[in-house]
Image (cartoon, rainbow, N blue to C red; front, top):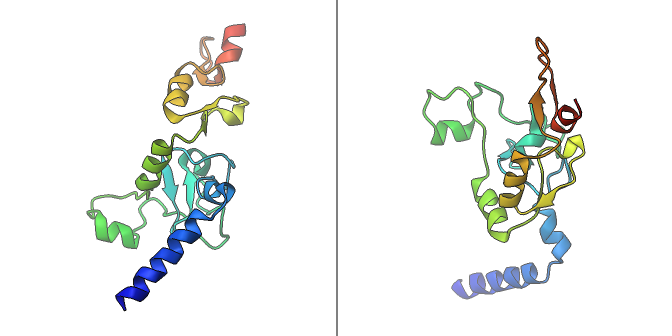
Length: 157
């Protein structure tokens, strides 16, 4: 029996090594923004991964129609197993995948990509860029104005 198990694992390992780079890279792709997943990575009830920035308040999983993310206050099987009852909001993060992406130094988008920022780099460089990104939101400097505006628009005032 052990010989069969070893043979099976050798076959599986050979299969992984024969996968195309595209097939492997697709495992790191966010189904919403189509970029590489960036931390924090949240997981739906069935284990599909999405960038937290892309998830926002949407409770539906973008991969499967009938799949959802845990709702605030909802007790999931994971929350009962791993968390105390005092936690009212459970968000399941895929920390292992976050660490793997960081270790592989995969390029990620600036979190302002929806505001037209085109900066893409390794996570550390992106985090540094985001502090001074021209597309980041800032509070309007006009008295009694409570709007958030792009920093690039603020500079033009």
